[in-house]
Length: 137
Length: 138
Image (tube, rainbow over all chains, first blue to last red; front, side):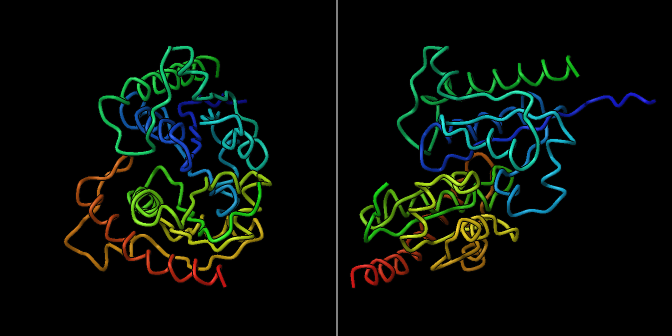
């Protein structure tokens, strides 16, 4: 039997339009996808698990998946598990910020230098989770 | 969650991979935070994906404007899957078609042209909000 080498990790972000943690989540995920681990990560828009087809719902079976959520409703983790497949790791933005001693940004948009430490802290934790996932695959 | 009367729910695309998704979201923020803060409320689209009872109640008991970022129409379809119907369903690209001088760019955050376009889009949608809010009152 041929071993299949896992080279990409799927990132599923909560979009959290309603709250600042959702914005931190989106920006951190984009930083991982575009800057920190561009060759090792792919993403999918979360609502495509409902609005898309079989190909989108097979996302978590094609890639080991890391979900990133902005609140304890855990929409990304729950939707991925229910509609696609069990995520390998589930990260929660408020927990990460608390561990780093960082406050949740007050605004939902127009992020700049003041919000960058929060976004960077979350992005670095996601990148570590990507590395761990690839090491263990 | 109690019914929020006289409020119009704004439900943008939640995509993180397309510029027009970012435009949809920025338009929703403009509408809910600057143009019509007293008449609109935002909710997270993924809450409908997980069948959150409070979010379902909100979108089935109030008029909803969906703003989608691509032809997959996730916002409108997720609303319908939750038992709601869009009072107004629009695609973010229509705002660019109406203002070709403002080319939106960016995924995480929009460029300046995109932010200007979102302001115009929100002002355009404000008339729809006013109409829907007035219907709610009667």
